[in-house]
Length: 479
Image 1: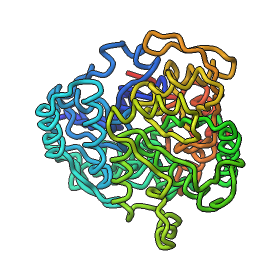
Image 2: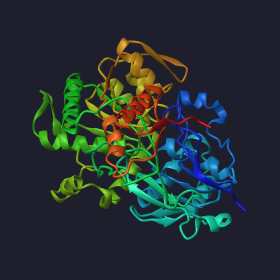
Image 3: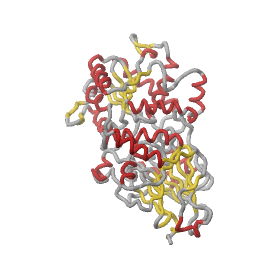
């Protein structure tokens, strides 16, 4: 008979020594465990985790009964192809919106990192869709049966519930409840990535009432964000400053989440200032907004189709006849040849434009061609609006650009003449106050908070903040 643990075991297979590679094993017995996320390592964390072996599944999976996906960013789902290749054939639980978006993410990941063979990709995606279990928010549902321990679990086997996390469309934090040898209705919460309050398009997360243990992210556990009004004003000021010399303003941005948030905020600025001048030759409503990412365009369409998931503010704009993700100044670039032509045109003509291109950390994708063409020229600006993990090209540009330094791209040394700007308050992650509030607002505080998904300084600062409130918090280590 299976041995049921008095308290569950946590085995972290990623996102503990940094912010990528999220993968957490929750083990209830010798032969029963579930995974929460299965993401790719990126940047320096890829090398630190074993280089070529890092994206693969380097842990036993025979006892893994299910995969639970908090949201579809690549650092939370990018190892799913490897998981299935290793033999996992159990259910993949996610929210209904994530079930729509996940195949798009995995298709792109396979094309970029594994194969362009359409037949192989389609066969894999068909398998993923067969294993997907789309779940509504706020509904308890049973996880796979715990056959070896029926006498211990009784009628209260393991159950799962998704709650809105406010990070990207479909994102959730996860509640798991079950019996243990020591306690009935033991509850554990995995935060996934929690969103910032008042983020565009999505309702803010509300904490659970109770939990025995919470596993919480700490990406911005050591800093505070600007409020949204100040953030939008800074974005407007950055654009006024950047466009005065008619260069290109380049936003490296993740295809899902950040791109749609930027479009939402840009539409608001253009709507409010329509008819007014940026400078003598350019009005706000003449400004061209270009999304150069086929994947981002697909996600934006999916966001549009999933309007019922938007927050009240976004729905109100629709009632006013506005289209926050599809407006007159917005253009999308599809083909690779169009992309290459546009890069050269903007580099040569210095026509004023805003370009949003993936990837958010500049680790690949079309943004790399823009960087090679535009970075040497002081007429252009690169604006970072998201976290740049250690060892990524984005982090290097962010660090060395303000010093007039250089970066190596595809073996070529690129001197950075363009202005490098960081809008640090523009994040889809909760800041220190938001993370602490998620725990402190619970009616019954957890016995333990396990801190993951952050750099050392962020994790330590968040631990100290919890400790000052009498909350038992530990920094998780990778197993």
